[in-house]
Length: 199
Image 1 (cartoon, rainbow, N blue to C red):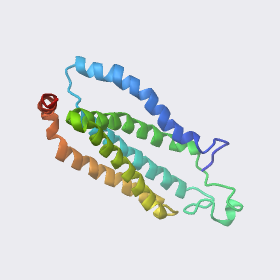
Image 2 (image 1 turned 90 degrees about the vertical axis):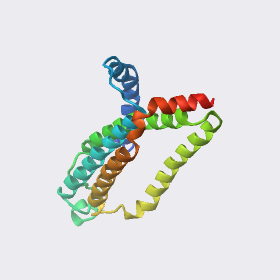
Image 3 (image 1 turned 180 degrees about the vertical axis):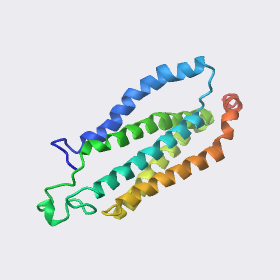
Image 4 (image 1 turned 90 degrees about the horizontal axis):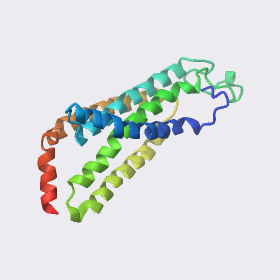
């Protein structure tokens, strides 16, 4: 992709900036507004919404990768053809095309991660709060290990398939999550009461 002098580490920072901007807006504007309108927005719903934002993020990544593969000079093998001048000339797609991916990822994290930590902490018995938080953190490390294990499959021209597969897998995961865990939204007050009585 054509960077036009933009360093590689700038785009991932857009994700962090999005989260930093969104968190106060969600906490101090969205949640009070929903509460004022008497609209329930429990943790399971927030997690599901976070997962749902991940689907268009990966779909957009697949679309962007498809655009790269349709653009010259090297098409499906960026920087790996004679026209690339020894790998110096990228395919003619501006690197800024990736910005929506990082913004959508930020939306996903802003809704899902705080809700996960809140649910894990608020539903755990007092004597197990640290253990439950540790298990939650362990799942994040397992996800990172899975990403590392799959990294040998990330190569041209298969990146489009990889991103499309991730979008499909995330869509399926979101549906399964909603089907399996949505019932706990209705039990939110009961679950909280049970945990409080354990203290």
